[in-house]
Length: 243
Ligand code: NAP
Image 1 (cartoon, rainbow, N blue to C red):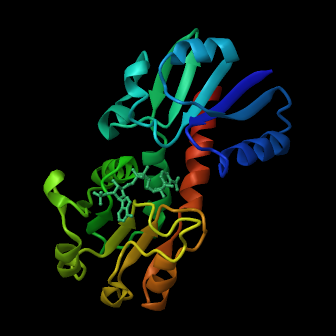
Image 2 (image 1 turned 90 degrees about the horizontal axis):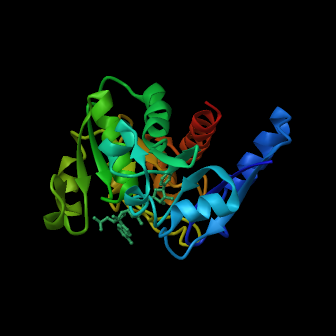
């Protein structure tokens, strides 16, 4: 039996175990299992991998950056993003990858119009870094939007972002605002500034349609929720482990 899994701190609402279980059933894969591992820290990761016979694992909040010093190697995408969400185990060596960034890129690209040349990315955490990497690959200029812009290079305040909404027609939510159970939250407090040329992408996948996306749709904007990206990052993780 090959053992895969997800490490994080609080995983009771995790979507990944069900997705992998269903994928294994669909594909007739009977010798693999995907489990959730709530770890108090990432210290001693090699010992944990050996003790549990792990062949590969995903990494979620709050360990996507903290895991890096524990690894033997990280690939160039994870290095550029500064975060790891997928680790492959080969002969006891732990190699870190980032599948969030290509998953975001691949799910965004088909939705882009020529007018989407500049973006506002709400948030400055690990998800915003993956989004920024993908936008750089696509040649889309972007600004991060932060509650504390002075603490982040290339970040602007929400007040300043409001003044940029007419020229930045791609708006990406990379904050947890609006996520279950706080579904009334809205990360972009200016839906009245959105119009039919805007594309609003919310990384949140629970709920599938957030208040941000509902209000953006009502304003005439195009929208995309986080579920397609979530599925794609899981598929890409599986492709890395199966190589
Ligand atoms: P995070 O580190 O907890 O937060 C990201 C940033 O959001 C923070 O750095 C902060 O930026 C801002 N923020 C946090 N709380 C806020 C609040 N109450 N009001 C306004 N801004 C707030 O989260 P993350 O790991 O980057 O993930 C962000 C979201 O993306 C989560 O909902 C996660 O589930 C989702 N995600 C989805 C996928 C997918 O595959 N669909 C993949 C990765 C992540 P400032 O302090 O600078 O304002």
